[in-house]
Amino acid sequence: MSRPRPKSIDVEIFDQKYSIYLKTPLSENEVRRLADDLDNRMREISAAANTADSLKVAVLAALHLAEELASVRRKGDEWTRALEEVLKK
Image 1 (cartoon, rainbow, N blue to C red):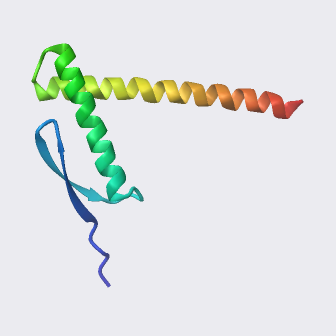
Image 2: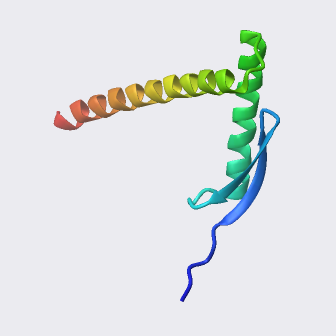
């Protein structure tokens, strides 16, 4: 028995087309929303950095997203520690 093939959707990010194969539980709409968000971020970064070099813009976008993720993780850790303290009492 063969496995079903992952669904492919096309998105455009920073004027480049990408075919994305959905191998996760994310919906097609969620992937499109994420692609749109990334496209917007890259356009903002490109304008602020005054560069159209897609590689530089992509790396800067990745750094911004990495910083956001680190911030969310720190806040999650703080909430976890606070909750653990409350549960100890």
